[in-house]
Image 1: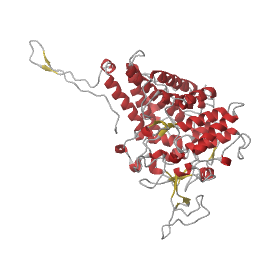
Image 2: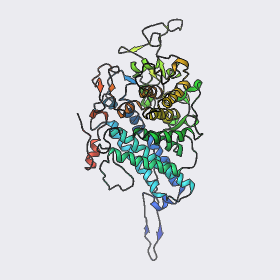
Image 3: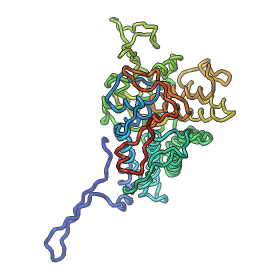
Length: 496
């Protein structure tokens, strides 16, 4: 479905008044709250509409850009007039289409979720409680996306740094200020806990469920540095029996599977084949088959992944080989893959295929929000930050590496970190290997108060910073100027 389902009904009441020949019309352009509250079908329709907000390109494409483009796993080979280039180059502006469109779509979705949340009592039947739980999850999910885009990492003075507006009702006249990062995270936590308690119906991974809420809580607690709780909720997902890591032989085709049929996927933003945007899709920048092919795997990422050419995750990179007249690859020892590749502006074309070929359809992709592998890596990081739990952290890392086809000397032990200084360094690089281009890298770097080395991602005409410090003002987007004008209680993020 391309557009959100909007519950708009025009009814005409016609009646004759006693002793009056005039026909009177009483039009209305909306359903009453009572009508909505008493109709499970209407509540379900509104919920479907809220899910639809997530897959609007104004939301899903800008979400991916805001979370992924500031990282160091990919290089954009050219300058572009697209405002996503400003996100990529850390040159934020107050009228960026990325931040403006995302902010608006997120709060539209939150308003829709609030309509259902307000309409359903906590003592309703199982079906309605499920709907309420899903909308609480969606409300938390969108607030979480917003605070990661416009608020600083939780590890940096969350009591004073500003997060985003908390919208927990449908009062359109209210003009709330930005809550602190801590207050925003605590609101998200409360919503997710309640959502998990209300949802009891198992649904495919394109919908909310208690396990999805648990997974989001595990991520939230990791960001909040509540390591025991992060482990607890990751374990709830792992031990739920609902999910399994894909077999090693299937890993390379992970993103071609329909998310609702993928046993590892917790939650994905489902796009139908009829919604495929082709060259306007997320994947169009990452691959040339059906897209523009302007973003390649970065040199630092390739240096990491090609240390073990038998790592199944190399299959998420699609090198653009040049063939001779007999159809054979041409040797080139200067390339990571050992063969000659096509270049663009001097950069070898290592395309990325995590956002195309879902169901075999070029440029079709339902972005994966959470998957089981992340739960193991959440545990790994939480263990790595817990004194005396280094061996448990390494065990979680090795589960992911073994699934990727690695073995023997390719695995870690506490006595052999393969040159890494700490177990945490091991974990963060494994997160980078496993979750590349899925929107984690920049967040992982800055919430761990590390700097981002961008020296290997400079394309032709690059004008962005070579090193981005975790204290830089540029690691968060600016509040859209249109929203500042509408709500004078909002405060802009600092600029450099």
